[in-house]
Image (cartoon, rainbow, N blue to C red; front, side, top):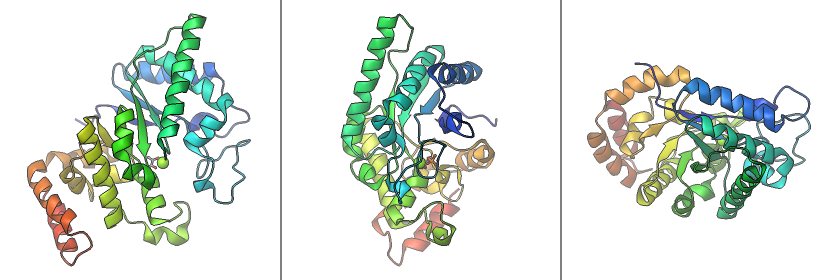
Length: 286
Ligand code: PEP
Ligand code: MG
């Protein structure tokens, strides 16, 4: 059956795009509630605003000449409570209508997680004071898309309820290739040893802390990489609907046990002369 078990990445930037001004709390709330009710019990992971860099909107342009490294995503949200507060209030309120998780984009240090948690706690307190119903127990997860976050995934996994690997940005930042610059997209390589090591580090950290790890970058829906990711221990794949059929076909046909053995061999030989042959073998195992 062509059906996913959950919505792994609900991007909220669209609410801000192609318009003048910012959406208010009620607009956020109505939008999320409609989606949550439409899902009828299927879990959804709502990503908080990821504006900036490749996702620009009117009235919110970064002054930086290097916007991918500038005030984007969680950095912008923590700096601008006027933008962030309405969204957090709306998510907490809408989450009484179905299973919701909150996911934070572009984390690079633990202070961001702590500030975010403090904002959520304070928002709950305000909602309670105002007598507005809200979901009290809502899992908070982080996107691992900055190499620093991947390398310290063990620390993040102790303070978060789940991790999701955003390979689109993780590859951009690790390989130092601007994802919107066609001149350098020939360098885009999800199989670069550095990327594979970072992904493995995050999966291992999630396992050690016993929290779920998913992947929500384009890599997760690509059958060229799925066997390897399964071999690394990834079990949650989030992708665009158009990739579901082929990804499911691929996932159903492979043996996790065999892949795990082969992947362990590959990870020990990354970048060596055996790398390509081991990788080919993994890809043929499905
Ligand atoms: C990612 O970076 O992998 C991701 C899923 O987020 P986005 O593509 O929206 O930046
Ligand atoms: Mg991203």
